[in-house]
Length: 208
Ligand SMILES: C[S@@+](CC[C@H](N)C(=O)[O-])C[C@H]1O[C@@H](n2cnc3c(N)ncnc32)[C@H](O)[C@@H]1O
Image 1 (cartoon, helix red, strand yellow):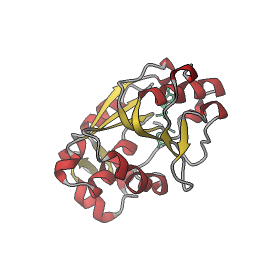
Image 2 (spheres, helix red, strand yellow; image 1 turned 90 degrees about the vertical axis):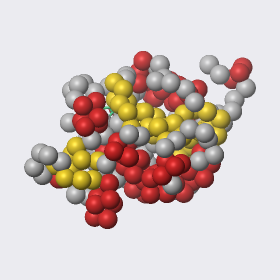
Image 3 (cartoon, helix red, strand yellow; image 1 turned 30 degrees about the vertical axis):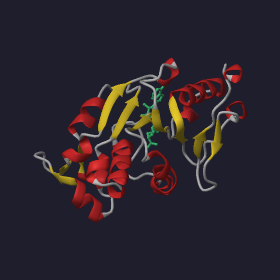
């Protein structure tokens, strides 16, 4: 099982509602790509964070496309079930846990409520294919994945992210992931507090 957990790196995730949401909430649909989502704690944390800041009505416009290469072939099932053992959800603040999880039939397991589950769908996908799952994303979250790639692969994947983001969209990576110089004309850092980047428009001759 890939290393991940609910509400990992809250400092960065909270910037989604502080710096990103005010811009993207005007989009008709808030399409988010969580690339390298493992078995679901990250996309579900994002969904919960957004629901906390959005009305029920507006939250219905959120669609999180969670993808992973998923060599175990188990992530899709886990994400669509939305059931996690007690040990995996214990870091979540009690108030949030009680609001968004109910006891599952399996002992010591908890199920996400449908309102959260319905916003997240999983597709098995290899980032190195450089084929986006779709286009027009408002936000791409890719944390603790790019570090597994070599430099050229990282540049290629970041270029692909740029081309699949809509105008005014954002890319979010982990704190330690600096953008390579080759990608500097594609994004600008949106906040000094974290690796949150706003898409820059580039003229067609510059696109490679
Ligand atoms: C350390 S986990 C990160 C999970 C989550 N993003 C987080 O930060 O908690 C890395 C994930 O990247 C996925 N991954 C590795 N290579 C990939 C590729 N080429 N395409 C898509 N996902 C990949 C792994 O399967 C794993 O689930």
